[in-house]
Length: 212
Image 1: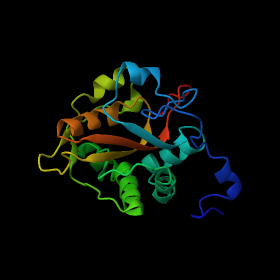
Image 2 (image 1 turned 120 degrees about the vertical axis):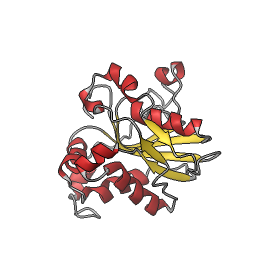
Image 3 (image 1 turned 45 degrees about the vertical axis):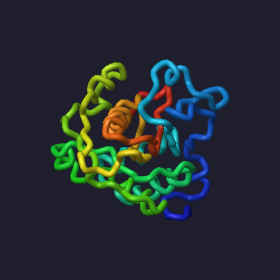
């Protein structure tokens, strides 16, 4: 069995870890790990992306089980896999927030659970009330890719008293597809004075996948 008892060593070895060369900013594959053309043409509001897996089987099913079926036992496994890839330490960690109505409906924010575990493992401060989702937007996964940036515009706000000015903040989420959600929160953090923003995600959707 694996260290957490969730899968055997053979299954663990087959998980789709993101080991190929990829853009350091958005984590999409590039030939030699250089910055991709998209990030050169359209600079992101975050400086780097760290992802443990590609969003493919069976990790996509594990994330869906956590997110939609309350398989909370998966939190520690997924968070610990991501934590192993962190090499640049931020000053603080935040989770991508849910809108209050979505949080009431689901009962928990999987990104908050992941962020809490990672912050604890790395001994970093977790800012639990620094960021809010102020617009109840449609689910990103329900929209075509081209509409996702527009859907997230001004969806987040940073509490005026939040200790982010001049600091490096890491945003934790479960999946990055287009980067619109994390990008918009990163933009809000930068506007609030953050000097640097990292994106930490369990899984990165690669070009041949459209799930989120």
